[in-house]
Image 1: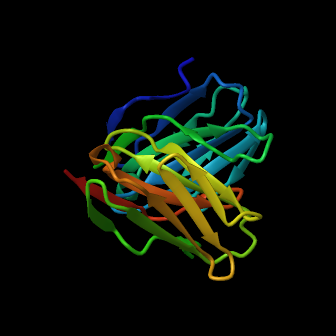
Image 2: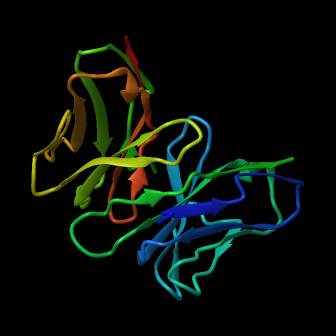
Length: 114
Length: 108
């Protein structure tokens, strides 16, 4: 049981390049999330998904796209990377049942755009 | 619009003493609150939670108190241990709004 996995761990992009951050979970969770954390700040929600085929915007969706074709995978796409997207990106998942909203987080992807 | 606020960026306590981390929120519709702990270069890990129908939840050394009228919650760690040194985030709401975090340092 690997939990939530993210690849790559680190990446440097040039301005205007594109990339996809991968996220996978093996806990059969319906809910999945993408956050970014800037230095000294809390986590800000980019996009989330309540199940395969369903995605919705969070607080800071501009410059990103997501898709959810399977329960396990929730990739985050950056188009036309900008320095403002330099951040640490965390993927998380949670179950949709019960009273607990506990999220399980991946180890993060540190992205630098120069 | 910062709906969840942690106004203390850092806290330092002596080993064995109590650590109290505070969190304020603005949305009275939040029905669930969680605390996460984060070590460097790792993702946050869940610590303890509380629903809005309760005012206290306890798990070992960790207790969370909720004051709905003041829109305030706090995390108490007793006794504090050096291994508790980490950044602590509070989060609230169905879409999990996070505070900016408080860095706790427990000195031996």
